[in-house]
Every structure is written in C-alpha cells, then in structure tokens.
Amino acid sequence: MNASRFTKNPIAMTGLAIVLFYVAIILVSLVWLPFDPVAMDMDLLLDPPSFKTGHLFGTDEFGRDILSRIMSGCAVSLIISLGATALGAVAGTLLGIWAGFLGGRWDHWLMRVADVLFSFPSLLLAIFVMAILGERTYNVVIAIGIVYIPQFARISRGAILSLKNQEFVRAAFSNGAGKSYVLFRHLLPNILVPLIVQVSLSLSVAILLESALSFLGLGIQPPAPSWGNMLSAARKLMMIAPWTAVYPGLAIVFLVLGFNLLGDGLRDVLDPRLRNAR
Amino acid sequence: MQDNEEILRVEGLCTQFRTEQGLVKAVDGISFELRRGQTLGIVGESGSGKSVANLSMLRLIQTPPGRVTAGKVLFDGKDLLTLSEEEVRAYRGRNIAMIFQDPLTSLNPVLPIWLQIAEAIELHHKLKRPAAKVKAVEMLKAIGIPDPERRAYDYPHQFSGGMRQRVMIAMALSCDPDILIADEPTTALDVTIQAQILDLIRGLSRERRTAVIMITHDLGVVAGMCDEVCVLYAGRIVERAPVDELFYEPRHPYTRGLLDSIPRLDRSSAERLYSIPGSPPDLVDLPDCCPFHPRCSHAMEICRHTYPPETAEAGRGNRTVSCWLHVKERA
Image (cartoon, rainbow over all chains, first blue to last red; front, top):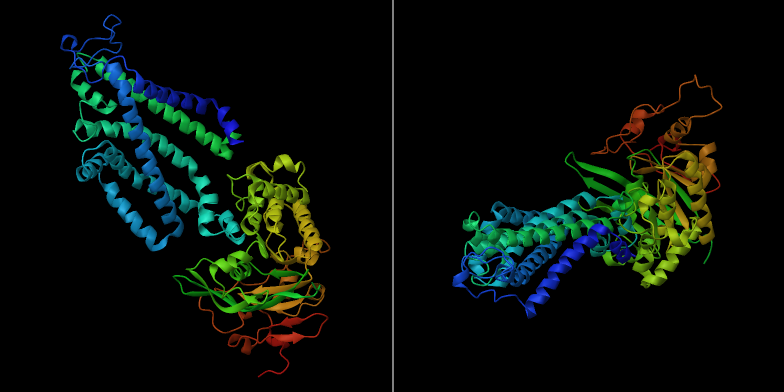
C-alpha cells in the first residue's frame, strides 16, 4: 500500500535517486578512486579542473585531487549526517513525546534541561561535547546528535501537547488501550510531519556543523578528507582557486537537496490529509 | 443468560474536580442499575455531570484535577473502581464501550478506518492483523457502509459526519460489549442523520442484546430510544422513571420545566417558548440545599437548607424523585 504510493510520488523518487547516487559513489570509492585522496603533488598545486592532467575537479593547495577527496569524504559526511540525525531524532523524540504525554514533574525537568542545552549556540555545545569525548569520527556523530536532542524533544513535545487532549485519544483509552499503545499507535503517526521536516533540516545542518568542527580542528582531522574540512580549507583560496570551494559545496548542496526532496515526498506519502490535496 | 439480569450497578458515585475556585462536585452520589438489553437515558443540561459520571465509571477521568471520591461501579461482580489500571483496561472496549459526541475528532485522522475499528479486537482478542481486518470489514458492512472492502482503507477525512459516527459505532461494537455508553451520539449531526444513527444504535443493540446508556440533552432522543430515564441536575439524579411515565407525569419541578421548554408545533409561534428561569448553579462548594431551589417556583423554606431524600413513587417500574414536594412526612 504505502510502498506503491511512495514509488508513484515523483518528489520522493527524485530525492531517493539522489541519495542512492551518493551511496553508489561511496561504494565506488571503496574499490576505486581516480587518485589517492591524500597523495600530494607539488607540481600541480591549485591546478584548475582539466582533462589533460586527469584532475577533473582540479587540485587543492597541496596538489591533492579534489574529485578523489570528495568521493572518499562522501562516506564520512553521509555517516555523520545520518548518524547524528538518527541519534538526535530517536532520543529527542522519545524524550519529547513521553514528557509531553505524561506531563507533570517529568515534563518540567526534562524541558528545563532542554532549555539549558538550547541556551548554548549549537556549535559551542558541539565543541563542548567534543572536548569531553575527544577527537574521533564517531564522537562527531555523538556531539552533533546531542545538539539535536533538545531540538527534537521540543518539537515532538509541542506536537504531542496539542494532540493529547483530542477526543480520539480518549476514545482509544475507552477501547482499552494502554499509555504506550496510545502514544505509539495514535500520537506518533500524527506528529510525523513536523518531525520529517526537522529531520531533513538536521541532515543538512549536520554536514555544516561537521565542517565547522573540522575548521576548528575538532572534526575530521586532516589529511583525512571530509566535505567540511575541504570547504573550510578552501575559504581562504576562494578568490584565486574557486574550484576548491565550488565542488565540495556542490556535493553538499546536492545531498541536502536529495534529503529534502526525500523528506518532502515522505511527508506527502505518510500524511493522508495531504494526499488528496495534491 | 437471563434477559432481565442486572449487569451494571452504580452506587453513590462521586467525582470531584479540584479547581482554583474550589472543589467542584461534578457528580455527587449517583446510583442506578442497568439490565441486559435495557436502554437507560441520562438527561441533563450542559455541566450537569452526565459525561463525567460515565467517564468515571470507566475510570477515564484525568487525575488530577478530577478524582472519583466515593461509590461503587459493580460489573460482573467486581467493583471497577477498586481494580488495578490493567484490570480495568481489560473491561474497557471489550465489556463496556463508548461512543463519543464528536465523530470529527473522535477518529484518528492519520490511521485508516479498518485499523481503528479493529483496535478493540486487536487489543482484547489478540487477533492477527489479517483476521482483524476481516472483522473490521464485517463491522463496516453491519453499519451499512457501501463497498466496505474498499472503504476500509479510507481515512476519516474521506467520510461524511454521519458515516464517521457510524464508524464510531462499529468501533464500539466490534468486541460485542455488554454495555454501550453513547455520549450525545447525535449532537454533532443534522436531524436526518440523527434518526439514522439512532436507528442503527437501536437495531444493533437489540440484535446483540447490548445494554445502552444514552447520554443526551435531547428529550426527543430519550422518548424514541430509552426504556428508563434518569434526570440529572447539578451532579445528582433528581428523578428517575420509566420513559412514558416521565413524559406523562413528570414529578420533579425541573423535569416539568424541561418538558415545558420543548418547542411544540401545535402551539402558536406568537407564544413565547417557556424556559426555566435562572441558570444552573455554580458547582463550586455547593451547600447542602436543593440545588434547584433558586429556579423553582415551588421552593419552600426547607429546600434552602437540606437536600431532599430520594422518595420512591408508585408506578410501573422503579420510580424515584428527589424533591421535598413529594416527601410525605416531613422531618
């Protein structure tokens, strides 16, 4: 039922195609890359894109092939983006919906903790967590995930609050349903729309947060490539060698676009109220 | 199973709400009993405690602010008010089911209809999804939805108001409950649909020997549906009578007022419609008087400081009234 509705949705399918394209790139990068992504070539520093040298996207300030670096950085960026969002979405949503549903003291304290986390700018919070955990790839995932938890908790709590006094909740209880049944069967599907919007936003912000962390020396450590640290290295070279910034940037833009289309499409598929409107 | 077997007995049910203004006694000592196959009407104005009484029976009152403070709800030899949450849950939906007032908000907008109808079956009989789906389609057929196999997959917004209320009825009756509580099932519907819904409830409940508690403020519904009526005022039953006796011979001044305020076609429209003077009392810290006395044209001195005892009246069924006018020997 839902699967066929998904495949018939052009927006969702475009998004899925883009994301799958990136997954394919990751698979290819595991077995073959045009150049070694960390090999420096002192003769070809900041070489513009050309077929003659074989550096299709040009080289960076150390003469490393940008295409190869984008390809091998793809896995890292995708893992960080998906991992951090999954962590934040699952943990934050669970906390948020229980807090909103149960209310009372639970809700009060949980939201105060969320307020405290919220009061830090996300980058500062991520730096703070990284400083505690140490510089590791999976710690980047955890740090960004923790930044996301209060955001998801807030959104899901608010959505649950506006729903939990609806008559259908009472009807479910009068049918003999328990709390967790009502919460997961009845309420969770009702708040999927705001959650999916937040997920597609978070997926893209994670890539940018990772790049900020890398820029500060806390993210993926050079020479290992990530789109984030490539972009931050390119910042000072933008005027003389624009390709160093444009290609990693495009890689990010397309992935974000893919996630957003996928999220949009999923939302249309999952929310029966929107289905007939389109 | 005997026909006149008593299946539910409510004794002295009290529900209070703690509010900022004070303690509200929303339900203040209600007692009644229900026999298999019987339809009991509970009538009263908004705020008279009709819905609260029925939610209290199934322990669906949100605590805090509400609390059932006294009373017994005896079903199947057990007092529902003393059971654990888990034990009560087993009764909800399976033995006692409810229909709510507004079919628009009582269905979950993002779940297909069949899933919602199958819910009680799934919860109580642990049926697998396909079997539950078959049962849901059967119920849809029983409530007269055309093309049930296809419509089962539709969502609530694809149904009209009347059809949604039918779906609510299907949900409530899916487990063949002993008692159906219908909380103003027709208030949100227009008149032609009202009749259909009432017919459906009557037909299905008769067919399945389901006892019905019909909560309403519409005396027309009561006249057409119920065997017995309880008139509720300020959280107490002021009069209880078989339905025809209540209409022909109302004893309590409030009941009389209610009957007089029904618009009638055989009266000239120039005549002003009767209405009971005043408004329902504030239930916060209500003193121990007859709550109706400020609006009553027969009010006596004693009404102002003591609540009248329940007096049994002669009649075919069990008939009681709580009014000093009918207390033979005044203390």
